[in-house]
Structures are given as C-alpha cells and as structure tokens.
Image 1 (cartoon, rainbow, N blue to C red):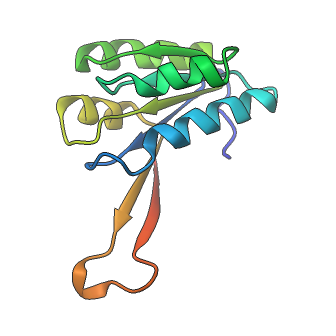
Image 2: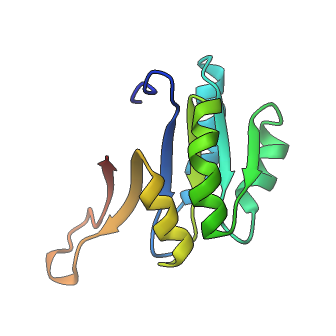
Length: 133
C-alpha cells in the first residue's frame, strides 16, 4: 500500500462502470485493515445505496465513514477530508455518472476492475487495474 503524502491523506477511489464487481467489499476490508496498521482510514460511501457505510458500521464501528452522494459535495468535501485522514477509501457507483467523474477527478489512486475483450478472453479473463495521479 502506498504511503500517504506528507501533510495530506491519500484519496483511493474504487470504481467501475459495472455494479457487483466487489467495489464495496474491497473498500470495507481495506479501511479497517489500514486502521489496524495504525493509519487513520476513512470510508467514503458515494454509492446511492449506501451499503458500504452500513456494512462498515457493523463490521468495524471504529472506522470513520461518511456518505457523499452528490458530485458537488464530492468535489468540495473530499479534498478537506483527505487532510483529516491518512487514507480515504471512496466506494463509487457501478455506472458512469457525474459522481464517478467527480471521484476520479479527486483521486490520488484509482482501482478499477477491467475485463478483456471477447476476442482475447482466456481462463484469466478479469484483471485489476490501478491508476495513480
């Protein structure tokens, strides 16, 4: 896991244009794990269903979680949240929306699941892609 930048936390966005690929599950596991490693980790639930913030309240109530489901709120509040925490895990929507665009604009690191095209499929048809800014 990358180290947070000095004086600022790292905004890690878990995004994909498709739902049901494990974005919320990954965010709900990474935030508590980093908290256990003595990092301040926050889960930012940007999905309108708010499932990851509900799950983390039950699984790891000591991990801070907030809901931001408006693109303007994401653009305004995510940078200031990054100053208050070491890692902010943003769980995005399973679609290409203004919320997804806002998250990717503010991300220091984006994690997205990708799939090979049909002509290139093999047994290992899914991959995980990581982009840093």
